[in-house]
Amino acid sequence: MAEPTRQDFPLRRRAKAAAALSLALAAGALALAPATAQAETTGDHCVFDVVTEELTCADSPEAALAANAEGLQADTVLLRMYGDTNYGTSTGTHTLTVPGAHTCSAAYSPVEFTITRMGTFTNKASSVRTYNSCDVKLFDNDSATGTSSTWIDNLANLDTAAGGWANRASSYQVS
Image (cartoon, rainbow, N blue to C red; front, side, top):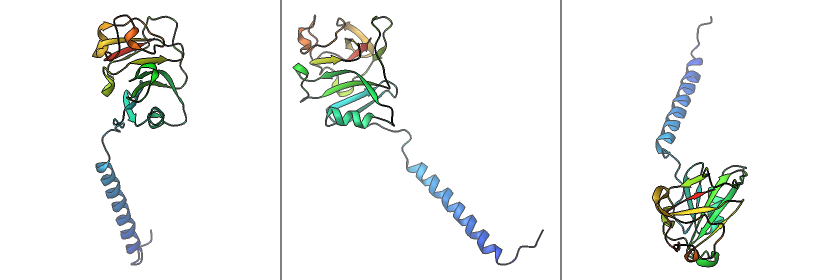
């Protein structure tokens, strides 16, 4: 093995310095990065993703859907609750999505999805639309407990549902 010459040392020192700098920068970047990604939760229009269990909010239903979308796989909307009767959006929306294609089964049992939290949309739904053969059952309390509605397909005024469900739901099930 050849004896290192004096000219080799500066190159080795520069390589070691560059490696140390890269390592320090990577460690600094990791220290500055948040521990977990946080979805945006400000805005009157929110999307709940059943896979990530994250609520993403924005200033319009379309912007909330776009902020929630990941990668190339399109999300399927299963339901949208509206803060106003007749599917009005001026006081906000709550949308449930799943990644990829999904059609709900015809049976109500077993329940396909239980949403235990509605974020800032708790007790604000005044109308609801469901998609892809889904129906929704609303609950008074978190975690799908308490008094529940009947299964609802589309309803422009939740106050007309048996028991009056406008501005009352805290959680829901989808099937």
